Image (cartoon, rainbow, N blue to C red; front, side):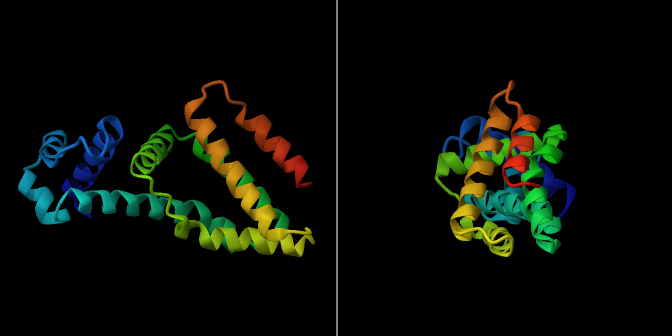
Length: 175
């Protein structure tokens, strides 16, 4: 990806989050990115192409976040690494801003993209099966849902006790 493409995507991500996807024109994106509108069309086709590229950025970042978990073979470490994922992310302001913008766009457009967590869900199910939980699929779904809520609170609630919540979950699952 070229430097100009990155500038376009970063400008689009920021504007889509600030003003909403529907209210943001490609001309606004071009102005924010300090490029011509034609360059946007050349690289991304149209505004929907920009959105697809931004969503792909989120999926790529998610794959990086989940890679270590997916490579893990010890079931307790799978759960621990997944539960601790927010601790590492919370220390990186740029990452937090990126995920805030991703969440905001997905809420506006009602896009969840559950396909991007299928491998992670399977890893959690396998971990719960190995640990002999009675309903491993439901446990995995519960943990995914909890972590989604924790991520939202981490990004929106300044006083949220992330470390305490993570420690509680680790105790709950005896990690």
